[in-house]
Image 1 (cartoon, rainbow, N blue to C red):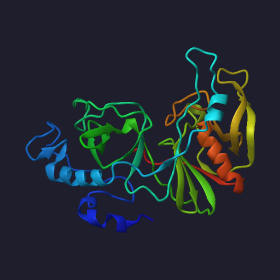
Image 2 (cartoon, rainbow, N blue to C red):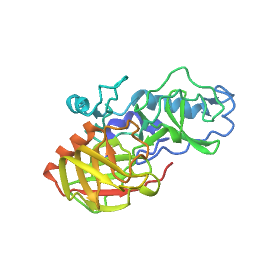
Image 3 (cartoon, rainbow, N blue to C red):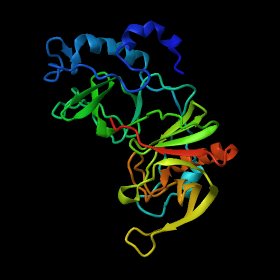
Image 4 (cartoon, rainbow, N blue to C red):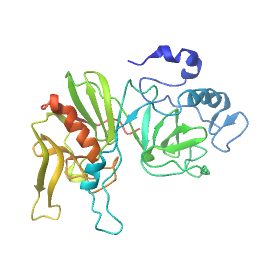
Length: 300
């Protein structure tokens, strides 16, 4: 559970934030035309924005622990003979001492945020790098989409984010894994305690990853994977690292052939970076038949 005692001094400020899930929709009526319109600041009523500044100052970024990159395995699965070298992704997920105090997300592409929550607004001068972890301090619906305040005067549209959403425990204990195919986020739990979260790539189009409750039934440090041979979608990949099969040939596994995590990419498996898959393989060693819960949250 969230440790509210650490937030007592910010009680008034946090009244605007829903700590149990997404931030409450802020009122932006009449504040979308200029950064400093009368009574407005950066798309919000001035009093709301000033209150949120206190929250942003107290919680500038999620307090998490990124996994150290498995440099040896990244190099092993990289092709350094090409120019430029084709390197396996160095992205890693994060572990938690406690749940994040506010809604959390990853930036999916390097971008300059907007100064107002609408498409035609000016961009900030500051770029935010892909895979940056951010808090979502407020949300406004404008121009047909939700916009999220990720920092002072910094708005990102919904499509540019992958949000960490907490699944409902499907009635299991011990160590279990949840894959949110809407957000392309994997979470790992010990009972109800969030232990780990990362971006993944699940099945695309007709090869979607099937929703449901499964168990890991086969683990391989490395394995060969093939399917759909003789069809345009056929593939045959050797030496795939850290494979954990859970549903009729679909598996959690390390992937070296793309760096597009947070987007659907696979033929049905759950792609993870080499480092993340290694961590997950070791973490499930004590729970080799761990539950894998494939679910879909709301996109907003």
